[in-house]
Length: 249
Image (cartoon, rainbow, N blue to C red; front, side):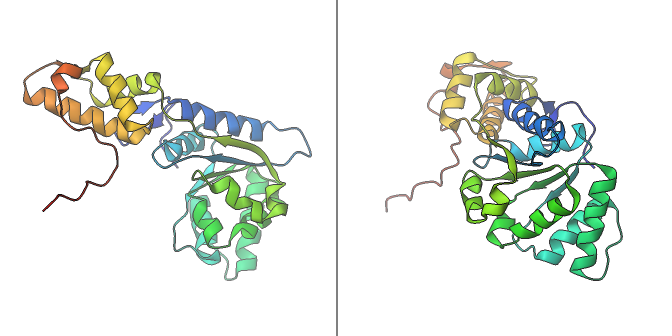
């Protein structure tokens, strides 16, 4: 299981309660405390770098959930093996046996299941397998995916109709940026105007904010300074995630 901390891990440095962490936790609260006969699956989706996996990690701790991160090479068997490994259950020999084992464990433990990088499951046409697990256990299942993940699910109407909560991750705001600056630059103060520009140039992507904060910190330290503002940053480029333009020959 993940670290049992009250805040989300943002890369091994520490834990901060970003807005998407709280949004994801709200989805889980809704699913876990749903009324009888309501569907128990939920979706939390958004662009890469918005901190969805960190939010999922937080929810895995808070709600004692089983957590798996899907891969592009997953087959039916490897998906089921991954879940059983997380559960600590010795897998059966057939797909049928493994589905029955997972469903039984979910039903008996009443622990939620979080499926991260769910886009791979959609792309590999394994969606109905997840629905089978849900139908067999009536468990809470939270699925984490990219921005277009909800639209992709429309192909499977029976699956789509079993989703209780659809929530989209939001871009980081200035409050989030301030929390990340305090986490990643505890020894160098990032000026408010510089932080606002970092947020703007990062387009609200938390991962890019972290990179820019670290670059600002390193620049300040190279100058022997304990703080850095927009003027001190000067004309240095910000990290935007874009590939560098080809140089003219």
